[in-house]
Length: 389
View 1: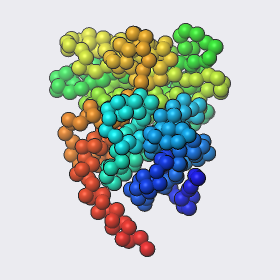
View 2: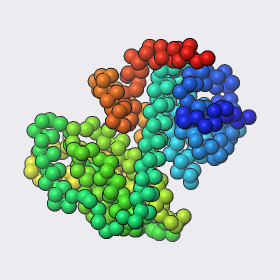
View 3: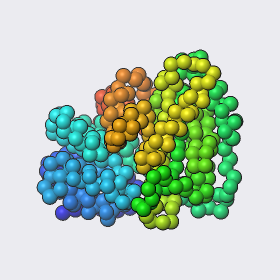
View 4: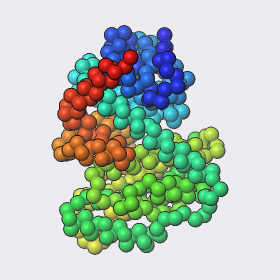
């Protein structure tokens, strides 16, 4: 039977735990109580019902082997849902096996993260905390878009640099990056409309939607970055001194937020947001014309994604798959963590990123830092329980 905590008005994020084992559920609840609210489901069908009726759920923890509807079936329903809140829900899969085939299958089904049943308290809390904050960040982005597009001050004017001004600033950023041996990334985001009865190239969204997206991008990027509207339905961002995976994560979050926001009145019409990404590391030369080369490549990738109806990031690997006629599978957070495993990071930087709202960067280093943070978190939790009357 579905259960709820009595603190209905709590501001703590709510986690849905789906597992047919009472012992496993009780163990997970023991890990997270005090920091999160929780809701239980005995199988995938109950978990699905809970998601439909409870909009306060932020993250799902699911077993893979359950009666009625297993974890794979639940993941399939979640990722195919017409409700954006559910479709983009982070899903953490709990597995008692270290079989790579099982992990690969869960990733392909849409799992956001995978944990073993013996995970420590600190590591689990850290992952859930950041995943719940990422949901809140994306929800705020979507609400901001919706508010902007319906506001009275969204007209023909968008306070963005001209393409010529963008090119000057971007070239200066590229030159500095090449001289200082730092990274430099071009992001090209193309926005389109897709209707079930429309074939071929996606239609252009209304001007008010494009302007709203431009304004929000301008407010969202770092002060050191530069964004300009470079086409009827496209924006180009230049960003430097950033890890490539972090740039990809930002682009993915923006694309999903644009596609999920309720910006189009026609219920059958869907927004598509495809972002081509190119890093300076992809280009062998540092010739003066390389900026144009990078910008053109990013745009070609974005247009390819748009033509294929793909919302998300199109990099070198995605471009190759699309040109071969294959479909894309969303890269999981676990894969991103593995790519970043060799990056050195200290606790002070981690805390600074949290304060700056850079949760996606923090998540890349959770596995590496959890062992160091676990004694501190265990101590805090024990003190919190001791102080509770």
